[in-house]
Every structure is written in structure tokens, then in C-alpha cells.
Image (tube, rainbow, N blue to C red):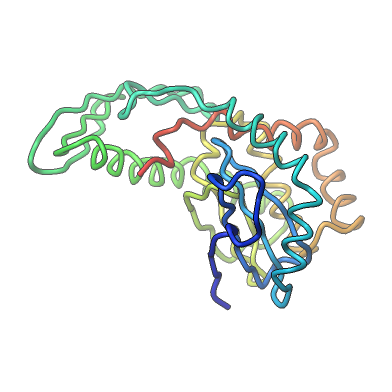
Length: 242
């Protein structure tokens, strides 16, 4: 089923300048409010839930949403339109970025320096975002597959995505999707995310059985889960900037 996105201005939020994105998801089991870095609000709605129910949900949780928006806006730090350097928390790697204006677009990794040529800042970021996905695939996919083999949990495919809303997901067909921004997190936190998604191949929910499996595979998961939830603050602004 396709995902539908609309605006929540018709729900008469208190701040008419800050409409909420509404996403209808066939996988959602309950109404959920998500607040992303920068303060963008998304309401995830199960199929068949009416506008009135969504409106009541938003009004009921508005105080929490307001607090969360203020918190997530505080994570945003003014940054250069094109970064001067990129640092990966997962591997302690640092890449210098040398961008120059040129008619043709190109990106070359030369001894730890990313030499970027593009007509403008937006296209320079586009090149860096593409490089980030490739770099993430090289660092994340082999590690996940090794862990899956160690735990004797089959994985049919690994996909690398650039998402604003989730660090990872697992499909019923055994495909594990990973957010390319995981490379900005500590290796221990990334491993926990791997465990979390691999556990979903056994339990496609967050039931007690699911969490018992996670705890068996990663006994210190609670502190790592808290760090993962706060991990968006480590993701540079350019990653999601158009």
C-alpha cells in the first residue's frame, strides 16, 4: 500500500505556521507523533483512522509535542552549506572536504580528502549525500551480515537508505534497511541497532518476547537504546538538506 502524505492545517493546531505532516502507514498499529531534528512534526496514522480521531490525538498530546519541538530545535546548529570535513563516529574516520565551483559535477576520494566539483552548494551536497550512502554501505552491510551469521539469524538483503524518521527497519521477507546516518554514531550503538533489527526477523513487533530476545543478545540495550534515540543530534545538517 502506498504511503500518503498531507498537511494537518485543517486540524487547527495552535501554531498555524507549523503544520504537521501526516503519514498513513499500513504497518502502523497505533497513532504516533514523531518530532525530528529541527522541530518537524510527523503524525503516523494507521489505515482506516479518521480525521476526527487524529485531531483529538494531536490536541491531547500538544503539550508533549510542544516540549519535544523545543528540544529538537535546540539540536540544530548553524552549519556551513557545504561541510569542511566529515567525521564518522562508527570508525573514528575523518574526511576533509575540498569543494570548488565547476560546471561538471564530480567527487573523488583522494587520500582521505573528498574533492568535490559542482556548480553550486546544493549540487555539492547532493554529491556528498550520494557518497555518504556508498560509504555507509561499505561500513554497515558487512558488519550486519557478520553479526547475523554469528547469531544464526538469516538476512535475505541489506538496504541502505537516507531517512529522517528511523534508524532501521526489517521486512517480513528478511530485508534489513539501515539509515546511512548510522555512521555518525558510536560502534556500540550501531551494533545495538543491528541487534534490534535482527530480533525483528523473529518478532515483527515490540512484544515482551521481542525485548527478551534483544536483552539476551544485548544485555546493556537500555542505555544504548536511549543513546540511539538521542543520536539525531550527531547527524550533520547537510545530510538532509536539499
